[in-house]
Length: 136
Ligand SMILES: [Zn+2]
Ligand SMILES: [Zn+2]
Image 1: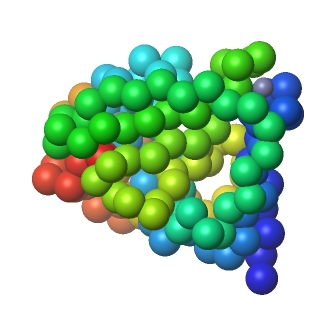
Image 2 (image 1 turned 90 degrees about the vertical axis):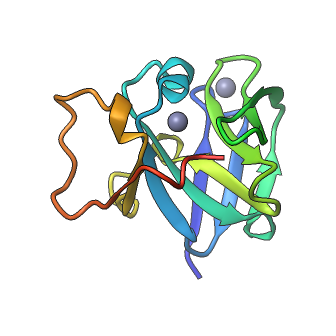
Image 3 (image 1 turned 60 degrees about the horizontal axis):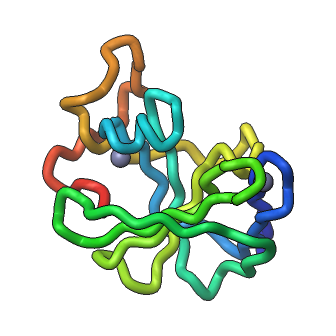
């Protein structure tokens, strides 16, 4: 089985993940833009049991558009948000794709919050945009 490692910038907060993600997505929402500092957020969703957590994380929660609480976990040293959980998807953990530092990681197959996409961010032509099933 494939084992992957996701880590923050300084490396102290890191995850070891077995097996494949159940969903890989990109999000154009303004909250993700503020969180990442980038104009797009990319994440892979895994079952919690696939993940071994290591290192210290600070948790920060906000309410998603859906009303569900989203809790983000970031490194208290370097500030990198490595993973998050949503009350709307119990048992699942979303991991930021960039934290794998692996250009061969599977590409997103779904895009959400198209309405706040920066127009210069071009999606692969076969990416379905989903305006209804928003993150959270
Ligand atoms: Zn760190
Ligand atoms: Zn978002």
